Image (cartoon, rainbow, N blue to C red):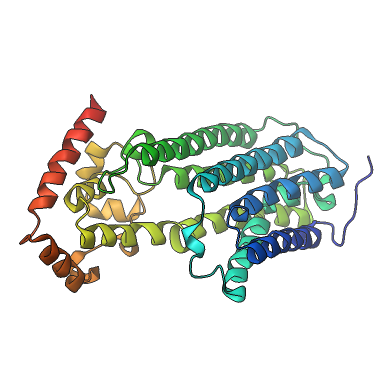
Length: 345
């Protein structure tokens, strides 16, 4: 099959246009019908569309292209399938409560989703492009290929299992004070984020093999290495934009001010790594310096009641409940410890 040259020889323009069109199509449906159920589905399946099109256009189906493209498709399908299943169960997406009826704020989310899909797809897009496939390719099985396959398998397994564990936990525990510390969440507060990061870096590792092994030269060599922007963008997104910043401090603040098992949750924060899975018994004793550096528990995620809580809201809640401080929390902490000990047996 002859390769297809579309707008540019790295497939950057054609994939951008396809992504814009794909997202605007689903945006028009979501906005017109006030329908939340297609939002994440549109994001995940967009990865599949780009991988299929660029692989089809390339005309050169080397093993590495096929494997890397399939890895992106499998991840995109799993992600979109799970998120679609979850939204069908919950009924609506709370993220859009203040945007659903406002054209430009709602569109802003979809524009950001366009950037996310196009950028994270870059390793596969460039690997399949004519400027890369015109060179001879190393046989599949280089050190980077093997490492990429192993990391991908670990990441996909961890992300899939973690999503299921959290969904099942929430489905079977109606008490908001209960802490999800089962399975992978015993080792990390956000194992699904950690898994997603290593998945994207594993895809990049395989994509860059032709350049790293000296087969691809010139601008194509630079282009392959430059696609590290994809996994870095995802990492920055999860760590500084839409992932940890929206869950860590705000989640702790909400628990503290509402008195929802704050002491139990405080202990969970103290002994559980924020991202990188690690034994809680060791993490709890680890110096703060190592937690902030090696384990990436940055100050922006840390909740300090003295600095970040609304004292008036806390006082009002305590007055309404007729308590002086936190005896209720102590009881809940004891209950949480019993649940935690039960998990460990």
